[in-house]
Image 1 (cartoon, rainbow, N blue to C red):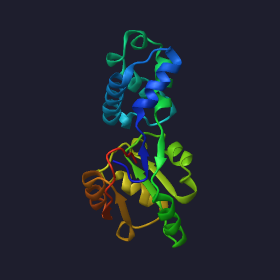
Image 2: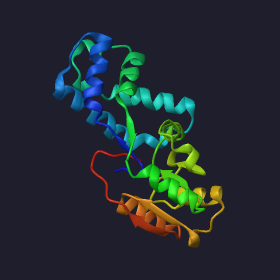
Image 3: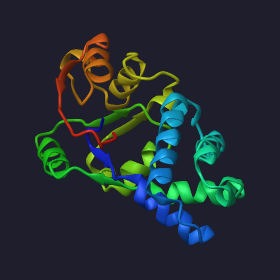
Image 4: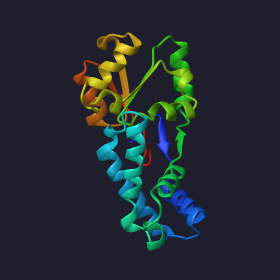
Amino acid sequence: MGTLLRLEDPAPRLRAALRARFAVDVGVVAAAAAVRAEIAFYRANLHRGRDAESLAALRAECAAQMRPVLPGPIAGAPQAELTAALMEALEFSVYDDVLPALRELRAAGWALAVVSNWDVSLHERIEEAGLAPLVDAVVSSAEVGAAKPDPAPFERALDLVGVAAADAWHVGDSVTEDVLGARAAGIRAVLLARDATSVV
């Protein structure tokens, strides 16, 4: 479910973060269950992370989803500590083919935009990944108030880069969100198949 970035398996990192903070090893099964609960909640609510304040609240609620599957001492931990452990567990990496492709497109004169169903922190993730200098615009669904396949995020990107829909291409890894969404906005689409552990 990612075109540019992959989410590295958060479960081992969450287990390590919880062990470091609380001196309790929750084990493989509980860590994986906690991650599944958090991701399911996040995906259903990512649109709520529109700015710094709402993003902080969303992250706290995401972390709270882990409590029911974690052992007692951690399930009752302070919210700030649990949220911090969750954030330590999230690590994104760039697919090997992304930087060369973006550099080649940039050199050829293409205007480039990232359009993703993500909260407002998408800008930070793109910056941290070293992709910011290679793109002209970053559009998260939370900022627009609509998620792909709604055409609104695509239309915002077109406005930001000053390109007409008929002259644009969209590359994405989802038939529904990317291919159908781009077509709804009048943009030609390319489906890029990725593995099941990816994100943007």
